[in-house]
Image 1 (tube, rainbow over the protein chains, first blue to last red):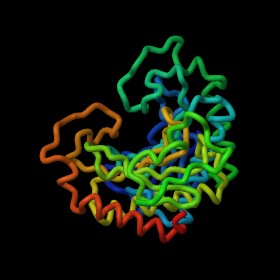
Image 2: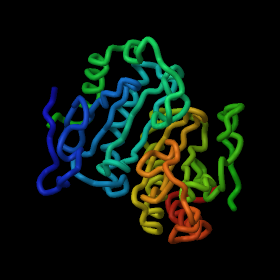
Image 3: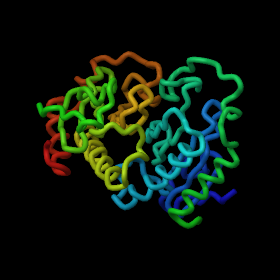
Image 4: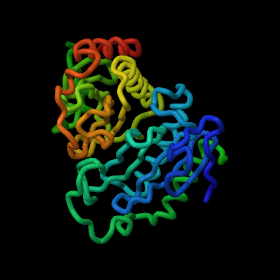
Length: 157
Length: 157
């Protein structure tokens, strides 16, 4: 597993969870962003692309940085689409609880516990067998594919 | 108010709500995307940037089209930040119900009915006076500012 690279001092914000730790299973770390898997049993194919430095809002980023970040988001989305054939991809940058810029990239399936509601809505159904067992690709293999895809965009830090 | 421009035939998808109608108060229409306000009483400063043609996923767009779309999203976000000083901006492209590519751009406030949960979560509190009355800028003026900002990116169609 790659190493978590904290923000370059003094940009890290004391108390910010995403300045202090990876925030999930670290899949790939570049100098400017990292990709983690969220370890959410209900939504196993749930990745996040996290900007390394502490900025709160999307529009705080310069255009070139926005393009770099969305390049990684797009690459993750493509791996999920190609590998899992999900019903839909959900993308979101919210940050109300942890205002450190990060994008959620989530593969959604018509059988998942909230579909078609957003993952943040109340569960609508129980899912058996468990979601991870239903994916076409095991999570370790999916992580490896995500890591390869985003490594083509930026060297590992 | 600008006119809604449907997808160029035959790209429109029968039965798709966002191929058939604007999807809210139409604020600005360019040849490739439009900006609407969602008319949500709980979240009055809730805009959507809708791709004109029917594509389902973000990664279906070519890189230049992604950049154009996010340019509009960023411009809307900046107007909301400058005019309203929200606690946070929320961005999302979900499309589980209407799989026609659109971005939600939502100004969130620590006093709103769901904060810090996503707008799709259950309401946590009643809000009085009503949200629209609490904004620093009246909605008509906000719409006008959004329209001016995105008109700088692409001519009106």
